[in-house]
Length: 400
Image 1: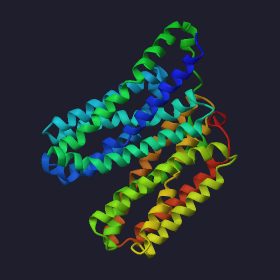
Image 2: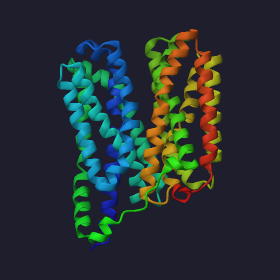
Image 3: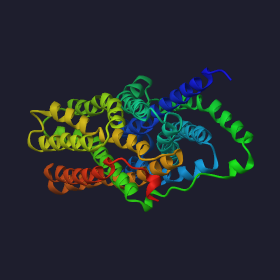
Image 4: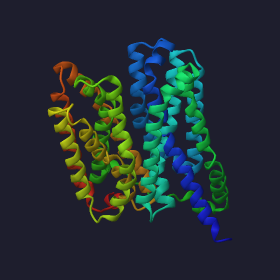
């Protein structure tokens, strides 16, 4: 067989991963940008709108946990094909319905595809690029961040250009459909390889890894959850904080977008740094310092130095690409990676769901931002404590 075959296969996997990553938040952020128009168009009640905005964390937590079970029964490439088809179909169906209930159900279908893909990407990095974990994780995290930013920024202009929120929401189904294409030949190739394997080899699976029974697994879940909690709270409430500080709505929105945009180079560099350092402690503590300075600055001087706080927040949100990289670094095998990814993300998203809710409750109860920012600082302290635990090199398979 020619020497170029593995390279071509690796390039196809990489392209496929990047296309999947671009789609992992577009369906969510485009909905958030058009929520008012969707509420008016479908007659969503306040409770129904609240359910729609909470669906991502519910889906990521609940359905992501099923992914290890899926990949024990079918090849990862085939599972990913189905996941991206679910994302495509769900996004198409939700923009052609006039029913609020059907809109929620089809949104859940789309989010189910994202939930599975969330878990699979770290495993695919470990499986196909074991010696370039940091570089490839950085690339797909950057693609995820770009997709998030572009969808949030362009959903409203697209809707206005076509005269309907349905266009601004439905256009992303085409992007999801494109992401299916690289995985079809990979799924067929994996199926053929499995058929060629002996029955005994096919039946004998790797030893089960149970992160829920380990200290490392729980530390990973807490770190993932705490950083996601702050991320969702920032996405949900930062613009309101800047409005309360005296910024016009348009300027407040731009400042929020700046956190995501400035996070693109951070997302690319952070995994590469994590893969080269003997311990993650310097990165964990540096990210804590950036976030702490940003929170204190937002509490004391939200208007005068807002661009600086946005920059520091973008650096602090580097905890997201860091934990994604660490999932691969703390597992020896693809089986261990998918088990750790599923546990850390599904448990972490349960924690993350509390962020916007509790910030909103504290804001309403106190009428200001001191208490909400104090809560985020407490969450940051918990994140740092978990980060110290996961900083030391070791493997989830050794802690069974």
